[in-house]
Amino acid sequence: MFYSLRSRLMVAFSILLIFPFVSLVYILTSESAKLIKNSLEVSTSETIEQYASHVTTLMKQLEDIGNQVLGSSTTQTWLADLRNSEAQEREELLSKRRVRDFLSSYAVNNSNGISISLFTAVKGGLWTQDRTYEQQPWFQDYREQDVKWTGSHLDEDQPDESMKSRSVNGYLLPLVELQTFTSVGIIKVNYPTSVLRDPLERIHFGETGRVFLLDVDGRSVLGQQLTGEAAILQEGESKLAKVRQTKGKRERESGVFAVRNQGKPYLVFYRELPDQNWTIMGVVPERELYAKLNRIKETMLLVSGILLVIVLVVAFGLSKSVTNPLTRMARSMKLVKRGEFDEAIKQMPNIQRGHSEIGYVTGAFGQMTHQLKYLIETEYETNLRRKNAEYKALLLQINPHFYNNTLEIISGLAAMKRNDLVMDATEALGQMMRYSLDLSSDQVWVPEELDYIRDYLFILKLRYDDRLQVRIEEAPGARELKMPKFILQPLVENAVKYSLENGEKAIVELGAEARDGWLYLTISDNGIGMNRELAADLQRGLSGADTTAILHTEGNSIGLRNVLARCRVQYGDAFEVQIASTPDSGTTITMRLPASRS
Image 1 (tube, helix red, strand yellow):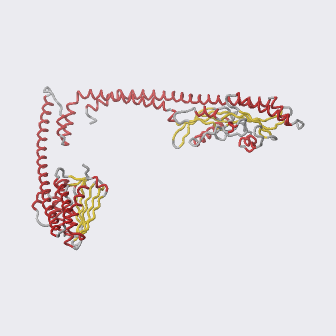
Image 2: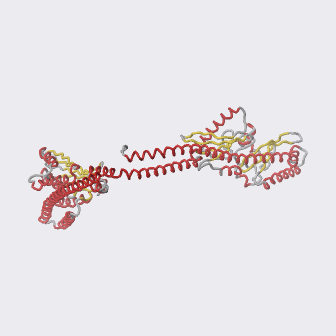
Image 3: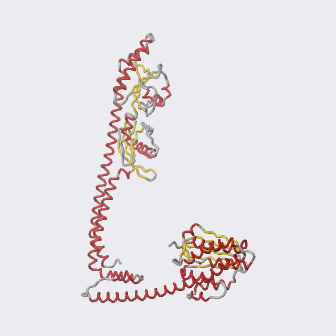
């Protein structure tokens, strides 16, 4: 096929147009990818830089407020009264009230919700009048490591009850009496955590990218949950430490680097805040950040694919006008080879008389195809009618045999004066007759055939009573399959008959099971069995071509021969039967039929 004229034309067009275009797409995609990637990284870094400016401005404001409180005459007067043991209690209370009013004014006038607390070693907190603050983690970090900028926490020492339940961060500085330059406590300037956290949470990179504010130990300053990104942030801190070591000293630094977590690539953007010893760190999956770039690449691939289709269509159109007659002739020959004559006739090219050689070959081949199709269809219809006649003859052979036996059973019940059971037996017979007279289809559902057998066994049970024991096992999968009609009744009839001849009781088991695309039907009894020669003769009969010979069979196993012949006519070589029989011990017959649901 590759060496055909059409294929060579299509390959030539593809090489002349697709290769240059693919090269152009590759160059443009590579260069644009670099520009877009750099633009995305700069834009992300600028967003983090803007947030860093916001943090720096707020921190500067807190430092100014702390220094204003420390240098205030109101604060210094109160500290002097605390130091002066001769000051009256009333004066001390008045100065403390003035300090409280002074500090409360900041909370009222400041839009960021800033509050201020003063703590002394003697009096404790200004608002709570106790020293429980000394047990708080923020105070321990300040006293032991001189950490002036606290993480998110709850502070009981607040001027208002509503402020006690909100998370705050704080700035700490020494509370110094300026006259003696003696440190008597600390000043704590609080600001709501939400002032920094809310703008941080509104920053998004891609769909799931997040930004965190971390302290020197890698903990969240604003109480953010680090569960999903903890490992990535830890890897980022490790790489950032190497960068600091390379620089030799701590300087304000920002940048981006890549990390991998669970086999997925991530980008980590960072911006250091040296004055607070904090780091702003953003984490985003690389795929999400570069989603826009990926869409551009997909668009380029789509355009190139469309152009490829256009080129193939044009190449096909040009080659069609040149190679179509010969191509259609070759296609028709392949269809004839597979036996698809109707399709082959449709594919035959319509050649004008001017093309004498091709026209002659096409005409001769068309006539040959029509004649071959006619001969094959005639032979097929003849064989089909013959097989259908054989099948109907075998089916009609069963009915007289079955109804004679059934009427004998009902007659026997009447002779035994079992009038109470004659009606039940007649009803069962009526159901069986309705089933047997319906010849609209040769295939029935497995449950229908088994219900027919149950009606038949009901009549037999009335006759033989406890001498007949039957067990029917129907696997769930078998209920959804179809089987030939009337193939179980002759086998069950023989099983009962020969089992009673062999002993006092007839024990018959009937099973239907679907397995591995096949339907298995099994009938076993405790009858007189059959010798090896008879079993071998029955199985050899399946390979015979003349199934009509069953119609004239005399002697034993006519019912079994009938069933096997019917299955052979319907399924051909797909039908298999296994006969396991021992004289005086019983017989087991297993038939394997193709699973059919229609």
